[in-house]
Every structure is written in structure tokens, then in C-alpha cells.
Length: 404
Length: 234
Image (cartoon, rainbow over all chains, first blue to last red; front, side, top):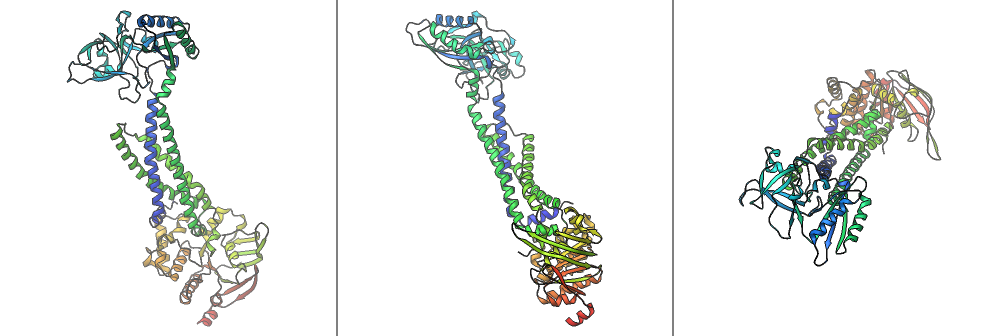
């Protein structure tokens, strides 16, 4: 027979120690649930796909220092060389790299005018080989043709007529039906018209923390610039082997520029989420440490309580309590303290989450996570009290007759 | 009721063996009231602990209410203590955080009685010791004598066949001691077998039978007529 009533009444006359542990459990619950929530949030961000064939792509910078340099001719030579290299699937010049942290953005709107709302989008200036080179999936419309590609001078403010957008951008522009975006004319730089000729399944922007990270636009531009990036896709498994070869080939073909900063897309993703990873590691350490500290707190309180009540335990044994009944007494006592702490912790966890949602625009916490916190702390509490409870159960009933 | 044959208890430390009981022989019959006396260190408490199944013995035979104690495991001994033995301790051993009602309730819960039966027994036994009106009080709110009465109520609540009292008046003044002793005598008259360990020769004289323990053995056995003892004390 459980002694819940007796335990509660005994606890009520000895509140301080139990209350302190309950508060520690509550604090732990509040922190670990929200910490795990933040870890999960970051984890889900890291698991998002960029839309790019990351395993088989890399890029490099091409910095021209030569005087009287024919940028257009050199770029075409480079792209032709790259596209003909064995193992290379395709190559393009690109102004920005997805997830790299640096890039271009602009506002696109369905109605012209300064007073109209615009939707922010990442801008990728590429040619008609972009879809193949990046490994993108065109889910509606068509690709650029070779004749669509224009040269863009430095500082140029006009835009080409045609663009390809991601499904997320199409949905932001036309919330009722993203497919209706195809063929529509929208406005960039407030009043310049552009026509959407294709819709991509996915292509992430360069900024992983941006809430519009899925909104991107391909613009048929090749840049006439002394500093540019070349993006290369290889056949599966040949990337690492081709990276130094590409660097060497390009450098040898033209001595009037510097080829450098070769980086794979996988490395770019890793760098992009470096802070997420570090924060998750710190949060995981906090969660584990707090849980362990709480466990030790429970062990400490239980041992103190048992040492204080040695004679009482002996008396209970003398009155007929079995070892299991003594163990159960302390486990139920701990369970009651844990339940109080966890209930307070649930309120704390939800309150902290509401603040986080309001302050950092995070999604609200889900019930599964709270249940996970509840279960974890109940298990930790019971495991922590197991050793002291077992120790208590081994107290001899003869302790009852000892006067010292 | 209680038969001990050649019971020995040896406490073993790293290099010392202490013989607390040596060939201890005793028979207590149903309805007896036996006082156990003896100097400190003579083995009285060890005898009480073994008789109350609080401690195991090293060798010998021990039968309690027809049950061979040597064959019982820890759970069996716990069950036997709860079902057949009531304990009264020198320092009362009440649980300070529980009121009188809950203190008496403790062994009844181990017995598995339902709430109604437990309440009936608690009220009946607190009434018996004259403390029914104070059942919501904490032990710290009672005098020593009253606390010992609660301990007696707790011991009686399970209807034990055998009551073991360890210096039940040791922490009481003489007036309280007489009152507690009278209560034990009443309980014995109602059929409960009592074994009482005491230093108090006068109290021991009030029981019909006294044994003296010396160096772990029963060294002396006196039989009194209870009525004579009561007259002598009066």
C-alpha cells in the first residue's frame, strides 16, 4: 500500500529541503526544454536542403589584375575550357554563392510604385547553364536561352526582361496560387518590369538566418567585372580530384589573373552553420550539465534525508516494513517532489518560450517537447534516488533499539 | 509461544569476535509477562533484537508462535514482525513529522488494511491509551508519558500476539513509569504476551516472571505471583 498521504503530510512539515529541490527541478525543466527547443530549431535549419547539388559542386574566385584585359572573351574561354574538362558536368559565372553569407538582394513587387509592398529576394546572376551547374530542379516554365543572357556592366541599374524564381518567391508574390506566377510580369527596383519564365523547386539565398532564405531569383546576366566567381559541378565522386586540376588549368591558361579561394559547397554549408553547431554544442552541454546537477541534488537531498532519518527507517522496518517498502517510500517521496518541480517547470518552460517567441520570432514550443522534459526529469529523479533508497532499505531494523 | 534453544550471537569485526549471547535458552508461554533484567552489556538488547526479529542469530534454534525463524528470509521476518510482534521502544520512536493518527497508521499500512479498518483500529487504540482526543497532535506536543502511550497504541493496533518492550519507562519519571506499567499489565491481562527489558528492579518485580541475563546467558529465573508484587509495591 502506497503511503502517499503520509509522505505528503511529512513533507509539508519539512518543506524547505523538498521545496529547494522542487525549484531546482523546475528551473532545470524550464531551461532544458527551451534549450532542446532551440537545439531542434537550429538542427531543423541545418537540415534544410539548399537546392544545390552540394556533394558535387565547388567554386573559386577569379581576380583579374592584367591591364587592357578582355573580360568577356576571357570568361567565355574559361567557361568553354571548364565545360570541356573530363569529369566536369557544367560551369557558370555567378555573383553569389548560396549559404555563403554574402550576396545580392532586391525587392520584387506585383504592382509598380514606391508605395507598393515589395518582397525581398536573393539575386543570382547566371547564364543558361545555371540550372544544370547548380543541380536545380525546374518545376514549371522554361530555362533561359543563350540569347537571353546579357552582359552587365559594373554599376548598371537596369535589369533583363526575364527571370526564373523559386517556388517560395512565387508563393510570396502570388499567395493564392504559386503556379500562376508563371508568365506574369512583376516589378523590380520599384518599376522595372521582369517576366517570370520559370519556377524552381528550391534554391536558398546566401543568408541562412534570413526568414526569406528560400526566396531566390535567377537573372540572366554575365558580369563584366574584374572580380568574379566561377561555379563548377562535377560528375559524382570527382569533385575532390578535379578541384586542384581546375585551379591549375585556369591559372596556366591565363597569367593575367589570380585563381583562388577554392571551396566546396559542403565546406560552405559547414562554415555557414558553424555558429549553429557551436551554439548547439554549448546548449547540449548546458542541458546535460543541468540534468546531472539536478540528479546530484536529488541524490544529496535523499542521502541527507536518509541520514537524518536512520532511526525512523529502522523503526519502520521494526514495525514491519519490507526493504522494498522502504525503497518505495523514498521513490514515491522523490516522485512527489519531482512532480511539483515539473509542474512549476512546465509553467516556466512555456513562459520562457512565450518570451522567446515574442523576442526572437521563434516558433512556439510543442507539447511533445514538454512531455519529453517531463519524462526525462521523472526518470532522472527516480534513477537519482535509486541508490539512496537502496541504501535506506538496507538499514537494519535493529537500529530502532539503538540509543546512540 | 517463544522458544529459544542454545541461541548464540557473535559480532565479528576484522579481528575481534564478541559473543553477545551464548547458549541462550528461554521459553515464553502464551500470556506470560516476562521482565528481562541484567547489567549493561549483558546481552539484554541483543536478546530483544533477536526475539523481535530485528537481528539474526549466529546459531541455535528459535521458534516463535510455531514458526521456525531460522528459515525466514528478510521479507518473511518483516511480515512476522508486522503480524505478530508489537514494539515499545525506550525513546518511543514516534515519527516526528506525523501526527498521532498517522503514527499509529504506519504499521497498519504495511499490513495492508483498508482505510476504514485502519481508522477503526487507530481510533480504538488511541482511545485505549486515553489519547483519542489528541490524535491530530504532533508527538512534540505531548509529554514523554503520552508519547509512550501513543507508541503502545501503535504497537497494539496490529493486534500482536507478542509485545516486546525495550526499557519502556527508561525515559519517564516515576509517576509516568507507573502509569505505563499499569497499562502494560492491563494489556497482558487481556491476553497479550509481553517481554519487557528493564533496568528498573521495582518494575521488574511487578511482572510475574523475571529473568536475569549475565554475560549473554540466562543466569537467574524468578517466578513471582503478580498479586504479591502488586501488594509489595503498593
